[in-house]
Amino acid sequence: MTLTDLIPALKGPGRRRAVDKVVELREENVILLSNLHAAGDEIALLRQDLAEAQSAQGQAEELVVQQQADIDELAADNEVLRDELLKLRARFGPQIAAEANANRIDVPPRQRDTSNPADQATGPIDVRSLQEAAAAGLLGPVLNPGRVRAEGVA
Image 1 (cartoon, rainbow, N blue to C red):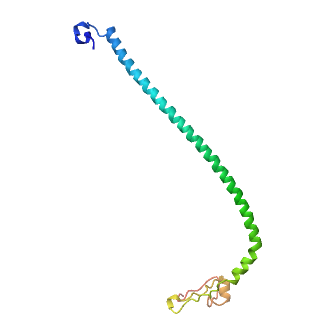
Image 2: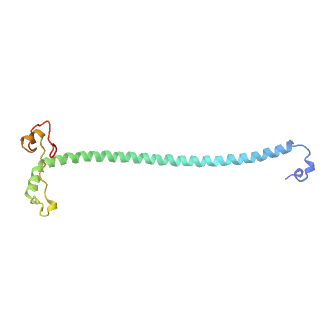
């Protein structure tokens, strides 16, 4: 605090004095410098994060390459085992089938209990064309095939 701040009469009249503007610019300069230092600290932290991320990316890429090599190796082993399986099936297939037939379990066919009248088995449904039904006599006496006479109607 200066002497002119303590004694307002020394400041003089007017709002645009150079002394006031210098004080205002110094305060703004202090704020800007503190912002600059904070930005520098933030940039340093971001650079550190970037270095850590690049290191993690390198490790991840190494892991991917290693896993791809494992996948290729397992695929090759799978092909070898598939070929061996096909050879063994061709060689021992008849023996395995003969063993399965020799050790089979026969189950007698199941008989449905139809002693309950509600559980009676249904018969086949008679599906014939009209000509076949007329020839079999299932339609009754029909004098004129174009006109069927209703019972009880004159």
